[in-house]
Length: 337
Ligand code: PEP
Ligand code: MN
Image (cartoon, rainbow, N blue to C red):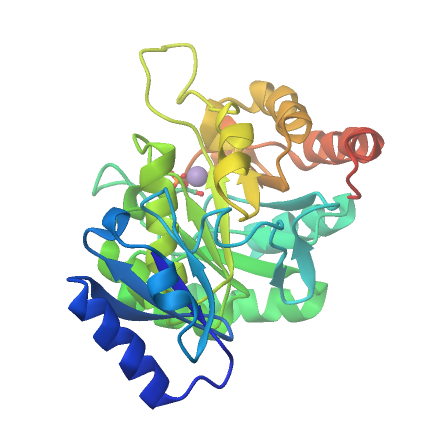
C-alpha cells in the first residue's frame, strides 16, 4: 500500500498516519519521488481497507498496489514518464538514440566517434570509462583519467554524455562529468549502487540484468526511485537463452509487457542484444516498431581494432545509414527522431 501525502502535510499528520499503520500491524516507510512525499506501507496490507487512511488529514491518495514494485508501477503513475537528459527528452512521441563506442580508448578514437554520432544526428554520446569485463585481463577502461577528455568533447560537440558507474566511487565521478549514469546489466541488482544512484540528481539508465525477469528489473528501478530520484530509463539489452546464433537473445517482447506494468521510458540496446553488427539495423528498426523510446547503439570509428565489443559495433557509415532509415520510419510509429 502506498499513501501519497498532500504537499505541505505536517510532521504531526504524518506521525498520526504512521501510528495508524502500526496499530494495523503495518510497517510505514517514508519515500520521496521528486517533489512527492509518500508513505510506503508493508505487512498484511491485503487485510487492510484503504478507507482506514483515506480521510486522515494530510492524505492525498491511497493506492493499493498489486505489484511488489511501487514507484515504477502504472498504478502509481498512469501517464508515461518523460525523462530529461540535460535537455534531451526520452519518452512518448520521441525516439532518442544514444550512440558511441563500447569503451573510450584514446583522444583520437573518442573524437572520431563523437563526431560520427553528431554527424548522424544522435543527441547523446555513450562510452564506457569503467568497463565491467568478464575477464580481468581484458581492457578495463581508461577510468578517471578519461573524464577530462570527455569534458572537452562534450563542450566541443554539445552532445550529452552517458557512461557507466560500476561502484559508488565511480558513480561520484560520473555525476561530476556526465549527463546520465548507466548502471550495467551485471550491476542491475547491486542494491547499494542502486541506492546511491537514487540519491543522485542525474537521470539513470538501468540496463536489464542478463537473466533478470521483468519484475526483478522493475524492483531494481524502485531501488533508485525510492531514494528520491524520479528519473529512471530502462534499457533492454538481451538475455541469456539456449541460442548460439547471437551473443544474447534480444527480448523485444518485454517492451509491450513492460508498458503495461510501468510508466518508465524504455530503450533497446541492439548491440549487446545481438553481438553482431550485421544484425543491429534490423533489431533497431524492430525496437522502434515494438514501442521502444529509443536506442543505445555501439558505434566505433574502426571496429576491427576496438578494445571491446568490436564485433557488434557499427562503423560511422553504417550508423549514419541506420539513422536515415529510422528517421523515415519513426513518424509511422508516432515518434520524432
Ligand atoms: C555496455 O553498454 O557497454 C555494457 C557493458 O552493457 P551491459 O551492461 O548491457 O552488458
Ligand atoms: Mn559494450
